[in-house]
Amino acid sequence: MMKSVLVVAAVLASSSVYAREPQKKKEPPKPPPPVIEYENDDSNMSDALGEVCVAVPAEQQTYDSRDNVLIVNVEGGGRAFFHFKSGCDTNSMLFADAIKAEDGTQCVKTGASLVFQSSYGDPKKCEVERINRWLDDIVISPADDH
Image (cartoon, rainbow, N blue to C red; front, top):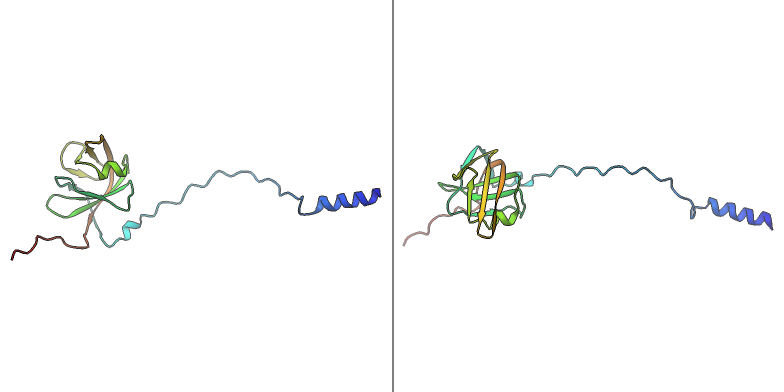
C-alpha cells in the first residue's frame, strides 16, 4: 500500500497539471514604436514652409482630432498644416478665437510658438515643429455672378 501511495504521488508530481514553469525575470516594458505620421502620405500635403502668416479671423480645423497637428487658413489665401512639438490640446486649438505668434504678430516660423486664445480659458502656447502647405481637394471660389 505504501508503494502505491508513493507511485501515485510521484506520478502526480511529474504530471503537467502540477508542473510549473520557472518564473522569468520581468523585463522592462519596451518603448512603443515611433508614431507613423500617416498624414505625410496624404495627397493634400505639399512642400515644407519656413514661415506662414495666419489669417484673421482665425479659421482652423484639426487633422484626425489629434493634438499635435492643425490646418489653418493663411494670409493671402491657402492653408498651412502645422506639426506641433508640445503644449497643444485639440479643444484649445479648435475653439481658439485668435491665433498669433508668441511675439504677437500673425507670422510664425518653424521652431517658434503659436498662441491660441479663446474666451473659454487660458491661452495655450504650442511649439511649431514643422509647417507644410496644405492643398484643398475642392478649390473654393466666389459664386459666379449672373
